[in-house]
Structure formats: C-alpha cells, structure tokens
Length: 419
Image (tube, rainbow, N blue to C red; front, top):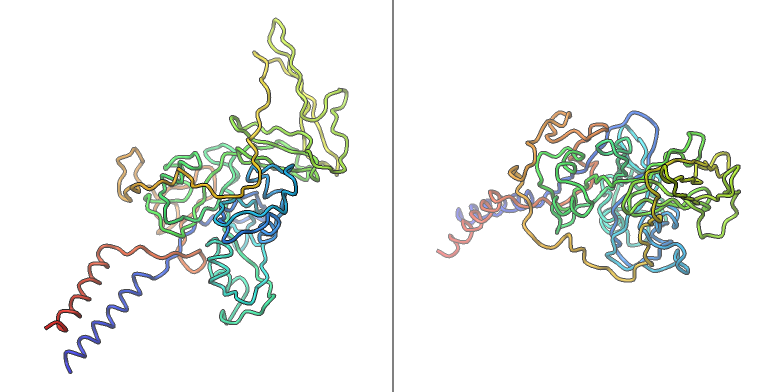
C-alpha cells in the first residue's frame, strides 16, 4: 500500500513537471508610445489554407492591390485580385500601426466567427500566431471563451512597430515576424539583409536565443517620400524591392532594387486621374531627360509630389550631374504564386549559441527598461520583449535540467514495479 502511495505521489510530480515543460510563454517586441500618430507596417503571414488574394485582403481588412504590391506581385496580371494563392505561402501584409493603450498595435482588423471556430483556432491557424487566444479574449471582453456566436465580429489586435520609420537613421518599415521551428536569428537576419547586431538592437535582446512563436520586429530598408504635410499620402514609405499604388490608384511608386530613391510614374490601371504633366514643361510624371555637355549632364525630371486636395502634384527639377543617369531599374515583379518554394536561407544548420559573443557581437547592454536585458533600439522609442498574456504564445523548449529530472522521476516509478 505504501509503495502504491509513493508511486501515486511520484506520478503526480511527473504530471506537474510535464506541465511545466509545456507551459506556454509569450515573447513579443512591444513599442511603448504616447502619441496618436500611426505608421505603415508589415505583418509576416503564412497562409493556413488556399485563399484568393481578395480573401486574404479581407481577412486583414486591407486593399487587395496593396497586398499585391507589398509582395511585388504584378497588378496587371489578368484577374490578379481573384487568383488563388497556395497554402503555406509566406506573405507580407501591409497594415496601419497605431498607438493604443500606450503601445503600438493594429486594431483595424475584424473577424467573423464560423461554426467550428475557437479563440485558439482563430489565433493559431487563421492568423498564424500573430495574435493569441488571450489577446482575442481581452480585446473583445469575452467572459466565456468556450461560447462563440456564429457570425460574431471579433476585433483582432495585431502586433506592429514604427520606431519613427527609421533604422540606424535610414528609412525603414518594420515587419512583425513570427518565429518558426526552423528559424535561427542568424537566418532571419540574412533573409532580410540585416545584421544580428541590428536585429538584437531593435528587439532589445540580450542573446540570440529565440523560441517558436516569438514575434520579432524586423527592419526592412525603405524609400521615403518628401511629400508636403498637406498631401493625403504624406509620409509614404515603400519597402525596398516592392512598390505601392497611391493617388486613387493613379500613381505607382517603386523602391529599389539597388537604391533607396523613390521613383513614381502613372499606373497601368484604368482609373480616372488628374493631369500628370509638370507645369511649364512637356514632361509627364516619371519622365527624365538627360543631355551631355562639356560641364556634365543636364538632367530634367518630372517627379510626383503627393496627392494634394485631390490633385496629383508634380515637381519639375533640373540639375547638373557629373554623369548621365542610366535607365530606371524597377523591382522584379512576379505573377501571383501557384506553388511554394523552399527558402534556401532556412536550410538546416546549427543555431548560434545563446551565450556566445565570439562572433564579433557586442556584449548585451541594458535595454533601458527594468528587468529587460538587451539593446536599446536605434533612433526610436525603447522597446522590450514582453512576456505575459498580452503577447502571442509558444511552447517552451524543455531545458536539459528539467528533462533530466523527468527521466529520473520516471525511473523511480519504473524500478519499484520491476522489483
């Protein structure tokens, strides 16, 4: 009898230990804020099933055209908005990032529940871990998560950061990226053409250790506009390697691939647009003329200057340059994807050691927030890695110590039975 009681006690301890091994933790980069302004931001999203472009756009409450352009998909492709995208496809979702309750987040997305939905399935499957069940419950004041009315409209709070639209004093848009099982911080940095130091800096990290489901803010270099504040598209930022449609679908602004100078021209869309000719010139928006002379190259250009009071504003500029510019390069556009290609950046390999700084990384510094080790973000508000119900969750990887303890307890259960 006594042995049975001991075994029952040990079994109870094993259950508790197993629970501790699989307890969810939540890590997400949080940007405190005090003003009411907003910025353009991106979400890294993986399709949970095949969806039309318009369905993905509806899921996040955005314009299908902006979804296509953010992913360098050709909008002139026939019926592009209704093209079916394959499951497991990774997309960048453009959103507006606001200041809500003292932190940056997007609250413009809503979701109508279906018969089989639970808060967990909506969070983990539909929105790919960008939101947690607890966040959905809190944002919608749900007292009983087990009871969801079909057709109920839920606010979906999504993570985002602004950091003044800059990274190391250069224009940038921040991507909220959900860490996947195959990821290492080095692979993420390589994929988005940044450095480990910068990624750790932005996310106030004290080491390179990351866990599945963590949400990182990843800086993407961008082309910045210089439109006047009176323009409705003031502050337009376009991520490098992509383009944006503005001015009522009349103007297309591209960024890159080899520079961060914004280049705008008329779109190929059939839209009712105001005049795009520069005053006192025969040049149209996007036109550039170059004439070589003994003193250099005389360059004249007609540039886009924002949508002001419903009118497309243009600026005629003339300059003398040492050499004539080459042809304008545009981001390579693709047709809507029909299959998913494996990203070679994430080939299997050893992850960097969490405690190692022998690769040239500086030693961790204070993040500027109590109890949060790491770096202070460059040229922006202090961020922090938040752990708690307000952030998205992931399973903790069992530590060697806890795993060994579990094995020992199991052995203590098995040996008496064998005897």
